[in-house]
Length: 475
Image (cartoon, rainbow, N blue to C red; front, side, top):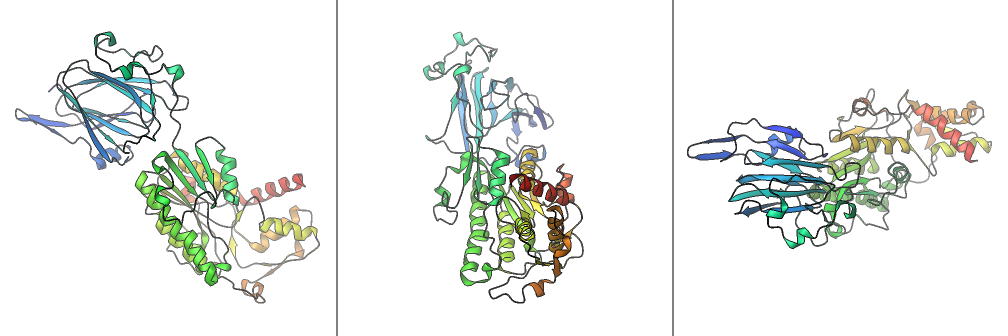
């Protein structure tokens, strides 16, 4: 064996993002050797995300100089050598600024490499009877998208130890295109559900309309369908953002509303979480302050016990539990959402302009959260690869009551704030003729955790002023 015994497990970065070499400890004596070829716990501890391998392949080559590649597949690979030694060359064939970047090194039983989706890989054997193994996290499919690069590409200029003119190469590999003609591998797809809602529109504004981003309404994909697991080639997706929900809080207290709320807010989330877990997809789910009963003294931390009061809150709490079963999950818990379309702020502004003096609830306390800020927080968590889990995301600043906010809307709109009368929740709903859901009195969420990731929540008062200024310009 050509590899040295006794190496320390070590991670080595390369110039290609995500392409990582690992030195592997190999233990042996005159009888032979042993190594842990893939050890999930140790690899993850060194920063390699558990990529969920589903297949183990072995390639045996009996002659020196056997050369294969350059192939870029739509899955991740863990490549290591069982016997012998190889020269490996990797070329980034993914869309982006590192397209065409090259890295080369030798692998023997004491070295392995993680090859991310879209990075082209090729190997040349340097010893007889060489066998290398690779774990992959998807099954081969004729429908998958592949890219290839010619082994002799002048731009990549790979310094093969044995000249290509002296080795046997398949006719198929010889026919691969030069770099200028390569079709780059696009990023894994992003699916945004609830695209027609307030948050869905804000996510489109934040994420853009790149070809790999899909915005879907219920008409586009029915998450309650029994064939959801086969509705897409899910392995092509890297992110699902669930901005869809049943939000008719009072209507949820009726028989039909209860059924619809449970289907959209709990059952659908469970189905999406299963798909995300099965295919290594990051799952973002948007939650609500209604999972709490509002009796907590102070701001609610993310790990506060769930105590929903009404059906809507119960279904959202169930959805949180379902979403948390996905290994790669972000649960974004928010409150008092304001975005494009009908909302509390626009209603108060309209009442002010029409000369109507409203009675507004004064014993519910929280902070406004604008959909643009939620979308920015979601993008931040995903892009920075923040630790998975639950994050509170609301506007920052001093908590207000709904009546306080109404008065501020009146003031900023040039009207007398004293026209707003604060009443209790019980007084406000005393004359209601339909179902009324219980509301949490305290909806203030603690923002320390999201702030610790480097995201700075916008001040709710400043966001309100900016929102109304934009509204005024539109008018």
